[in-house]
Length: 117
Image 1: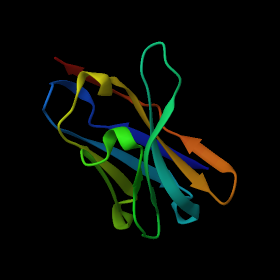
Image 2: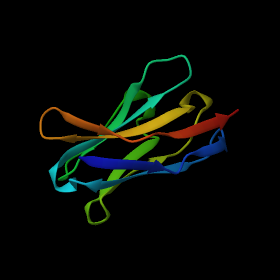
Image 3: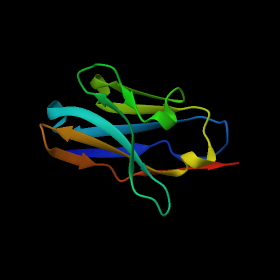
């Protein structure tokens, strides 16, 4: 198993920045990639961004391209998502999810991001 703990959420104003962290423990050597998702009130969970654990170009949903940047620190077993120019529509609970192998996924508990206008 892999345990994931997100942190870094909070209440900010539009235009502000936040950096989310996703700290992994357990079978971290089996992590293939980490994706970030978010779920706004009354909406389905949506993919936001992701990064392969062994490197490679990160990938983003169009709505956050140019504003969000994902990275990882393998030595710390931690993934990050830097969120700049936040908008009220970015308000959601943000989750990180790690894929191990082909089909095994583990999820964090989520962290709330609230952007006021």
